[in-house]
Length: 306
Image (cartoon, rainbow, N blue to C red):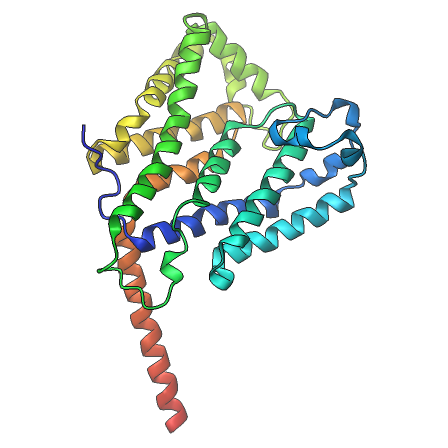
């Protein structure tokens, strides 16, 4: 099978992807209030991954104020990566360390790290070894640059995204089949999430209590989404039309989960757009912007001369 995704990717594609991924992180950190978790009892704290390298005394010393400071510093480095400050990958490296630490700490009180955040984190890690700053170099000609390395980079990022869905689908199929696909299981999930404490408080899933026949309408969502998740890697080898449909269906299921179960996987939804070939659109918009900028400068110079 031939890999067909991102055939037109170039040096700008990877650069804008770096900006896009860190804009997602900027949104995550600006809206996050998990730093108050430092007030929680450390007896319920669980050390994930690299967090095991730190002693218990280290974590006991962390206060909400200290964690808020870490959050603000992290936001600074995220912004530095977005604008390409000093064209230095050191900002990217420091951002990865701070993001990992902050995520590991605040999720230590939940005893799990959501796969929506892990996929975004993996994509951020892989940027460390990808030439995502090349477009900031002086005298770079997009037409003469070796686009093979940039296309390969975009393929790697796309592979991380589709594998996330693939392994989730396979895990559900292997560990929960066939019981997990029983209509009554989906009904119980909908009711439980409809009345659980959350920030959205949608209770559409609870309609299955008033209308029992609805469970036969919604239960196919789980097996269909499982099949779609397992087939997600096809996006790497399919036509643009099929790829758009795969992305659209995955987003539709995320939206359905949001309204029925109060679970918003916004990071996954935003990452799905990286499966689409956006290079031509970005290059077109950039040309229009450059043309508009030149006209504005020309008009400004003429107004000064007058």
